[in-house]
Image (cartoon, rainbow, N blue to C red):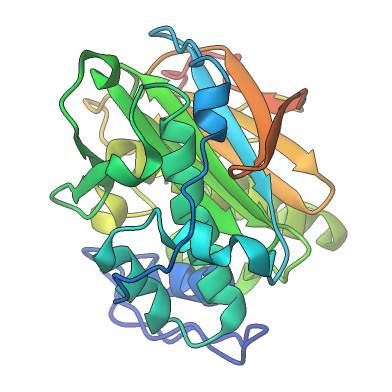
Length: 319
């Protein structure tokens, strides 16, 4: 086992990847780099809570389907919506929002929380401000109420990056989603330290011009998997591997031959700047929608660029 390793790369905000050990939570260094670029007031005045979700019928979400909501955004929002948005958040969410130093990060956090609450209210007769959340044992948020039949089995997963927030919704399916802005610099020097050896060799064999794109393909898939498992970086990033040499295919294998490798993966590119990966416990159809929370929404066709067309149990040794 290797000892601590120092991997540094300055990001757009001048922050760097910090020193990491490989275990038990290897890969946090890379996440720190991405998070640096991604990321109490009870009196909200006389803001009127929006009722757009009441004006439209509830959306059906059959067990076995996945809905993917895409929310494009800039560095600031409509000032006229600020008070309305804030009125939907719980006190602890408002406190968390105000901890962000940069205005763009405060805006993105506010938009993200309103997106979750307003979209959930498209599937159950619950006001956006009435949803309650709790964190699982590894910090993943989950629905904690109200207790209604309509929310039985309802689950979500969220990811955001510069310019886009993605929210995945399903009922009775384990899922994880990740989005990255692929116009940013890929941390290629981290591959040998944190990815599975087979992934590093495959990426290194590509022409230099193609390596950044492959990095983001691998990174988003890895993030989607550990999020679907709900354990975060308790899962070492080199304990599973993806094979992407066949165009359009996603091969997947675990280092543990007795582990459950029966996960399904899809990759999409909804914009020229963004890549999305989705991991799910079922091979479910995906319905995409684009929205500006509490303003408008529309159906959206997004092509899948890769999918688990080969058996998820195909032998792709991580080492």
